[in-house]
Image 1 (tube, rainbow, N blue to C red):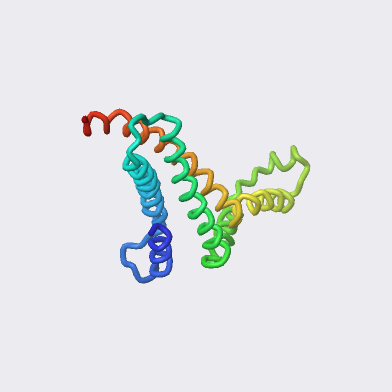
Image 2 (tube, rainbow, N blue to C red; image 1 turned 120 degrees about the vertical axis):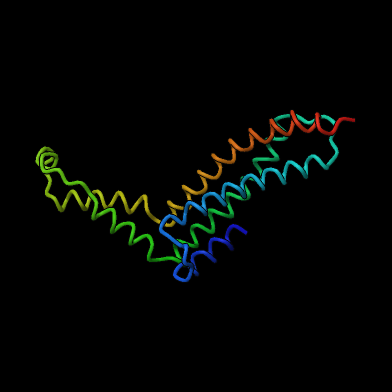
Length: 168
């Protein structure tokens, strides 16, 4: 569902009157919401399995397996999106980085390089960090880290609150 929303917003961005350059904030919020839904769904399915004694490590495994699956799907889509769908975005980001490079003549003199060598060196580093592969890798790490925090919170809440709500 997240991938469909992302594509719809991308393909219709010129036709939406409320579209702006900070549209990614909405996508990040939707992504965080879907991480919570994935964890809650996995924990609920595990709860319905009927285990009497639930251990924290077992619940974390269930929650993180859902996060891992979601992270792989979103990361793969991120790679496909930046590599094949929106191929103009990464060059435009690199152009913006190049235009905003702070060039300090004193630093250039200390390092003994020309202005063009400084720009080439920084742009080579930027090209390594701003590529479809690196963007999808950063998405994978970010979703897994966020999912770990959300899993801890939801597993603790599930283990402490559900026995109080559903007493036998």
